[in-house]
Length: 83
Image 1: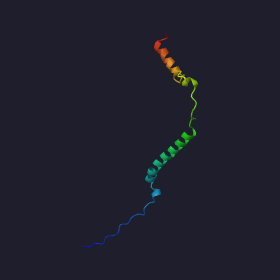
Image 2: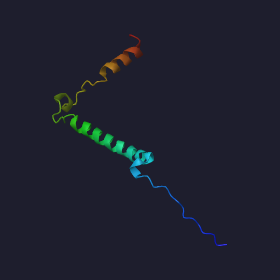
Image 3: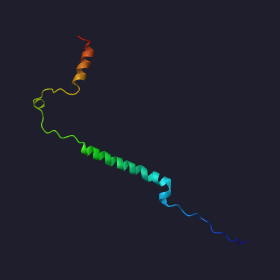
Image 4: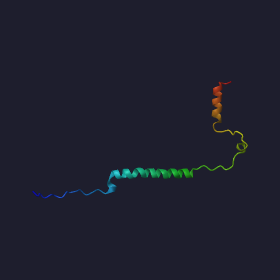
């Protein structure tokens, strides 16, 4: 009972660049790398200048007004109820 086996016929394989899943696997990390490079370029080009001189009021220890000063005054005014 030696039956002759027919060889398996395989279809021609598709090139890797024609498979959609490959582009999904490659495309995700590629988009992240490009976004990181763009973010780095924006950060370097838009960097704020370094301030090297210290104002006299800060050097002498005086309390300099900050951006929070109006908010603190409003909070204190609301807490005292106009006293």
